Image (cartoon, rainbow, N blue to C red; front, top):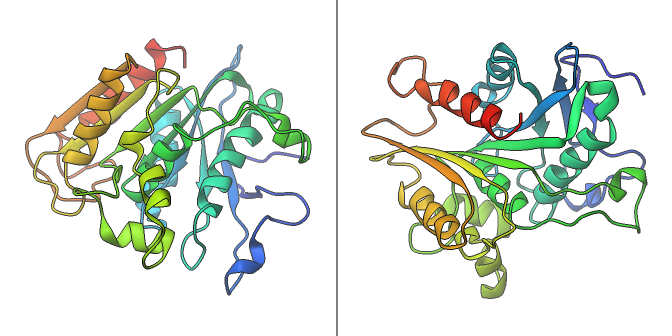
Length: 267
């Protein structure tokens, strides 16, 4: 397979699992934004937000290019959203991690430095990938034999919980109406953190009206309780869905802070 920068590549070869469970069918893709360098570096997979019903363009390619500007390779994952339901977005995110590892040599990427970053509902997807993973499967294709545990997770004003502080729209779009309580609990990811959860970088605004800051606080509290390294930034005020936040210079510092954090942990 030839990998071309900024050109989308289907995540799945052959039949995409669950492709026929929604109409019209959607083929998830991964779009690489890689760097040339003397030695392989880290790579961050970007998952735009959109309440599990869309994928916001300003939270995709612009984020990958901003990471490139700071010396970090990136890929944008266009994962499935409603009318597709769980587990298909998660399977796409896990597949993206496996894909990067399997193609690390062509991407000039260190397979031991593969992170994943998401906004809002994309942040929920990332927190799910960071708490629900395996070290490789033997019942699939060559890519499935790769681990889908990310080496770092970056959570930008994320949906984390489907409990008291959760985002009802994201929950309904992902799980449908009246899902089983055991499923709701398993995807309230503040309850799924363990000592093996990857290190995390989180940022939120304190008065975010769309996704309450308690989502980030609950996840950070769980990380702290399990001894998982994390960095949390809560900005005083700002609307939901800021992306790079170019109109808010103070909040826009998050990208530089995140890039420095990634480099400190080996990216």
